[in-house]
Image (cartoon, rainbow, N blue to C red; front, side):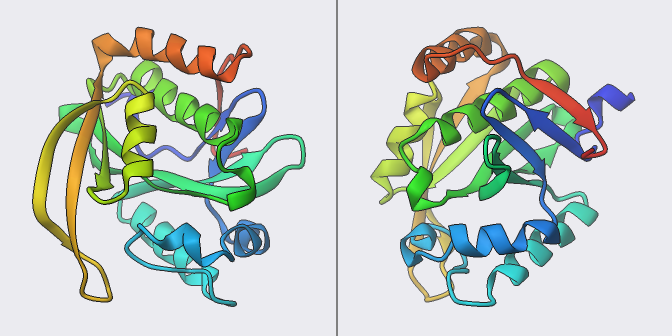
Length: 210
């Protein structure tokens, strides 16, 4: 695999109003504030709204990165340079040229705004146009209609319903719904995202998270 196809390269993805930086402890204070609302964690496997709990989220994500299991990002509002959430690539299969975008959360103050739309544009652009992915996957708790609808608005196709797919820490069952976007579908989906944003975005990548 050449350097341009290194799925685990530490990169910063730069848009017009959003950038995605490699998740680090330098984001701790911002993310502790952004994730302080318990509702943020309702549909995620672990909760990190309690004071002092965000450090374990970041440490775990960095550990996943070091094992080449995930590429976690801090979602940065460019104007303020504040971290307002997090997202990542995971379930990464370089040999098959596919990965999943997930573990995405955003401060309630930034939900239903341009933040997540532009972040997804950056992630999809990098996956398809730099990493040359054939397929990008998403999954959601079957009961999380908000997330399922948001994924479908990206133009992802619903593919399957996985029963008893996961167990939450409190013992609750999770059925999951899987979605995907394919490489040949990306040009249309890209235009759809730009239309939703209502402004032009020319994504760029900075190596080594610089």
